[in-house]
Length: 250
Length: 223
Image (cartoon, rainbow over all chains, first blue to last red; front, side, top):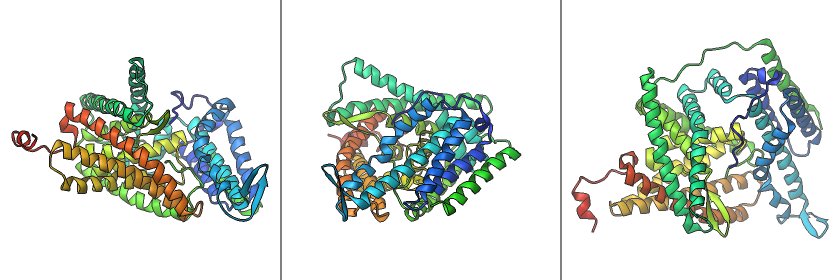
């Protein structure tokens, strides 16, 4: 998969300063409301998109950055849906030389619209919320501590190991590795084995360093924090607006 | 194989989410009781490792490529329930941070790749291993079969979920998904065994599912 540049969130704005819990509630609420909207309710879908664009504009994240990340996942979102119009089924419509199924075409339109809005919401969430805040938000939302600790350790070492994997791949290419056929996968497999040994050794070193600093096996607690008025207003207002639109708009 | 939002119906997602939540909750509860303080950071490191390993594409034919899943490798290395936790962490980060895999489809994705790929894959590994010689070769063969099956079964589960949701007819999608993943599964089997042989050469103590026969006995078993 495509992993974009290191820091996914660096700017500062009203949206960045919202509590992670408020953003999680509003944007994840948007995904659920959007996905559960019946097909054909185009008024509602247009409103969801406008809502997302408004939050994006408020966040002042560069549109270039958002678009780049959107385009990176878009192929996976429409990958299967692209075939839907070509499925057998009546009635059919002719588009140029192609004969397409009308039901499949409608399903393709609905799925890609919903998928696009859902991906947009998640991209916006991660572009305006540093991982540390997202993790603190999850902990304050009562996600089990062991799970939050796992997420935190994973996130901390993900870039490091991804870099390690890239370096190993580049070194193999420099030695003349050109994987083109299935049996070349063995080489990639050995690379992955070596990557595991290296990451495990690193894990042991990290554990010793943590133990030396007093780690006793308990996950570090996140201090509770009250939601501010603005956070509550944003979350409740967004959800109320979105739910109302899902109920009312055609 | 990451299902995006809006493909799978709400009922299917709700059902898989409940099953996944129960299984992951059980795995987390057991991990908290049985993992030593030393292993908890190592589990996170393993999740980061699976994430990085999934970025290394492997070739299939003439330039097309598939990517590694890693559920079975994790299960053989650190046990099926820990593997489920590792896959869940990987899928949650991919979904929340990289928008890879839908948020509402998270339950389905954990079900397919964690429960089917990890737990069911490990069950197949244990079953196959019972029928093979208790040697290194038998161990590797069982790993290869289970790695292939874990990918194929996960893709079949994905196809069934799409079909139940009424997106595509079962016959077409099942054939297409299983056909493609029979090939990707072969890559998974090659990679899993190659990776495992490197780990067993360097640190056999890290392979949880491998309990070697007492020293001397294993030498005699292998010609």
